[in-house]
Image 1 (tube, rainbow, N blue to C red):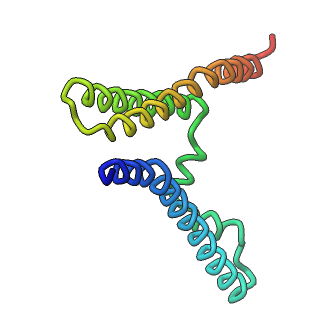
Image 2: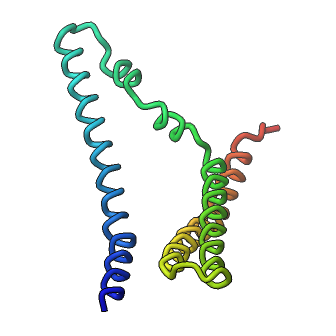
Length: 147
């Protein structure tokens, strides 16, 4: 009975507590970063009236956020394909490891979750493909010179 409880606790930890903790940490970092940025902006604006707030806010933006904003829809789509393939292959690898190498059964749970995440990325990739192609066709149509 003790083995069953420990398996349930490990599964609960991996499937519930760990993802919630990760989301909490990421959101806390974003909120903390925004608060620090706001404090810096208000101090700079209060100290000198001739500072342009928009330029200052642009200077304080995170490089990762800038790169994410500059990605085209096609680049975002390719990124989803890559993530989908990676997660799906990791999930399949872990699941096959359980069946053929008789590894610990918790790897099957982790592999299934990873495969599900990968499949969801692939679904989003294929669904958004139609809209990205339609947008690129419309932009090509708008950019054609009139005779």
